[in-house]
Amino acid sequence: MRHWPLYGLRLRTPRLELRLPTMDELDELADVADAGLHDPGLMPFARPWSLSPTLGRDILQRHLGNQGTWRPDDWKFNLVAFLDGRPVGTQGIWAEHFAVVREVASGSWLGREFQGRGLGTEMRAALLHLAFEGLGADSAVTGSHPDNPSSIGVTLKLGYRPNGVTYAELQGRKVEELRYRLDRDAWAAHRSVPVELEGLTPEALRLFGA
Amino acid sequence: MKHWPLYDLRLRTPRLELRLPTLAELDDLADVAVAGIHDPALMPFGFAWTNAEPAELARSVAQFQWRAISQWSPECWSLPLTVFLDGAPIGVQGLDASDFAIKREISSGSWLGRSFQGRGFGTEMRAALLHLAFEGLGALTALSGAHTDNPASIGVSRRLGYLPDGVTHKVVRGARVEELRFTIDRPGWDGHRTVDVSVEGLGPCLELFGLGEGR
Image (cartoon, chains in turn green, brown):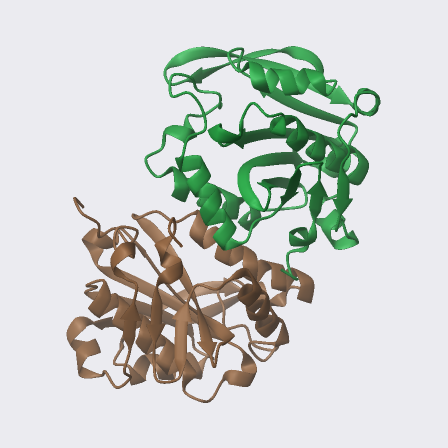
């Protein structure tokens, strides 16, 4: 798409491509979510959105909403991860006043049948490459509930350090969230996944406020 | 699209098709807006979105579409249908409603690329939307509004049987502007139908319009 410069942006890892989806691919992504994202007995997300009876529709709306409300000083970039040309999950990266703060936050999900194969690490490595190498971030942050070892595993493998805890309400219960932070030096020291970045044009950089 | 059946909703008139656009078509629609919608000395819209510089204006056309879909709920929705002539976008015909299941009232707004104006397309677009509203969705009334210096829009409203419904005032580009309001009810619509309209793919969308089972 010519008028939304982010459609030309692509990240490639050994097994994945991360980019914005077409409308049909968004439909397929919704199917992946419908097929299940996690053990129904656990809730890895800060809000229980994965239990919505209209999950597929919600995912499509949220994706388009990120683009519809995008501003250079407040954006959320929701990349879709493709394995062999098929969507398997999303890797989101967001920031407010990135031009000044130079920090991004991230969150992701991966269809259940694609978990346990190291794809989450490749997705996060791709996003960190975009943030540090492409956008010139100084730091990246993320968070996980203590009962989400796969997310924490990805975080630690890529060099993030613990950054305190926070508490929130989730489904009527108090839950702990472990916070992590990664600065540029630690990122560079832990790079193990080769990532190619394409299509980060001057127009795209302006949209990121970078 | 399985998860968003509105993408399969289609309205057809003798010369036009109205439906949601693909991403590539959204690009082309944005080009139509950038090429110009109205005399720059006038501002037919309540929000002066056409004042933006070209790249930003093009992005705003796309972002408007995305916001409409992303903020959609059966209780409050806005459907900006792209108007196609010979397969290419020429403008937008939007309809929106809140609590439609109870109020049975919609309002509409539209724009048409300047090079496509003066050929009766505006009337066909609005006729298509009224057909969807009254025939497809069971609306009882439809509303529209136009600034006093927009005779083309006022002409479409009059031709299709809308009646004057008072005035309201708005601030546009820092100045007080009068807006003429129009309304049409079901008998008024039925008495002025002149454009053949067909609707396809509405069934799976009814729930999204607030008309689903159990509502």
